[in-house]
Amino acid sequence: MAARRHITYLRPRRQRGRRLRVFVWILLVLCVPPLAWLIWNRIDEAPNADALRWGNPPVRQVPDAQNAWLYLLGIGAAEDDDPIAYGRRRVDAYVARARTDPTAAADPVEDDRNAPVPYVSRVEGIDGIAQLCPRRGTNCIEWAAAHRPALQRLADANRLRLQRLDSAIALPQWQEVPLLMGDFPTPSVQLIVLELNLLALEANDGSRLVDIAENVARHDALWRRAIEDAEWLLSKAFAMSFTERHQLLLADLYERATPEQREAMQPAVERVFAAPTAAATNLDVAAYDAFQITAITLRAEIPGLRQSLNNCMYGTPKNGSCGNDLLSSATFLPQATENIVARLLTATAAFLAAAPADEAAAAQRYAAFVEEEDPSRGSTMFATLGYNAAGRRLAFDGLSPLPTWRKRQNDSETLRRMLLIKLAALRAHVTASDMPEFLAAQPDALRHPYPGKSIVWRPGQRAFAAPAAVEDNFEDGFIVVPHEVP
Image (cartoon, rainbow, N blue to C red):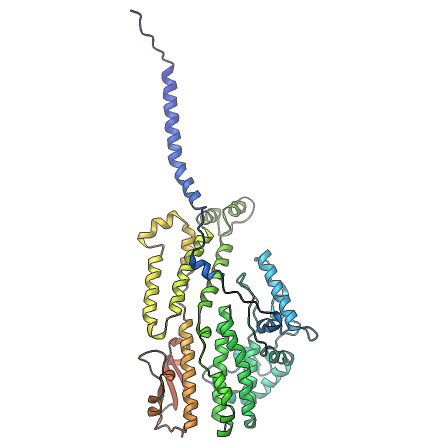
């Protein structure tokens, strides 16, 4: 029998093949999961319903010639220039910068301080807007009388702008430019506050109270349009402040007026003190605004994986180091992040839509929703690490405290009702001793908006008082309306 021949040279080859397979499997085990994770984090989401809602504000077409916002933006145009045309040039400069290079320095035309006719805020006796009559707690008619020379100097220094403001209030529309970046041009509000102070100064002439009341109503109409049409939260906030100032000033005018003058100024009173419309009280603009600004900020903050690699090799890392940049860019998906932001803003909008009676419950619903969505919770920790980790973190790090815009609106409504009660008491010649009974007889439309809270009469202070929703906005947390009675 022939001896079996052993082919010994095949064994090492089999061992090498086995080692190669082991190495390949180890390589696959080590590399495939990170590669799959990276690929997974390159697959962005489609916009959800909330992102489509807040990312697409209602579109209106407003001709430039009818746009009071654009006119105010160009109010510093040269004397021989058209404010509308100058405002359009300011807008075009902003839009061009936002769409080409948002990091570039602003064009000088974007800054109102560089206007051909700049606003003059400092004269002998007054230095800036902070030294004009404060919004609350001061009778601006008396204050203006005590500061007459300085106010007249400010009026002379800003004569052209004040004349143009009279043209702006006649325009029927209000529309801002779309928000394309956080650094956007705004009209100067100092001129509006100066005009209010000058109206208060004129009110020291008792024979002109009816005309001044009508002028207050004309100016107020502009800001009522702005409250209803504003596409920026900033515009809505300023407009709310100005309407409140008009109401306070008109109430002081009414208190000074004779019975005949009060009857003649009643049409102005009815317009200035009209209840806010549904469009005025709608605060969806807060969510539109927050979504646009957050989306712009996040996309600018995270450069993207390709740009991060380029910055590491040829430039400067954006967020401190190459490692931070690459990790953030690899785990940030713009639309998935915006979807999270949009969901949170829908919850915010639901809270802001709540009536005073439902405010506490709405705040609890909001807190529960935010807690459920929080990426740091144990039940969502692994999902957060697995997909869009940087985006989830940034969406929640940028979450602001529950906004107080609805409460501020409710405080403005409380003040409006208190001032209407004061006007009614003046017409009825209600004495201090009869005031508690007079208050008790007021209709529901003139009671405190919050259940369980009341507008009361403080005889020692000779004033109406009501607890405020935003307590730190008012001294001792109370809205106070002085009222001199016999």
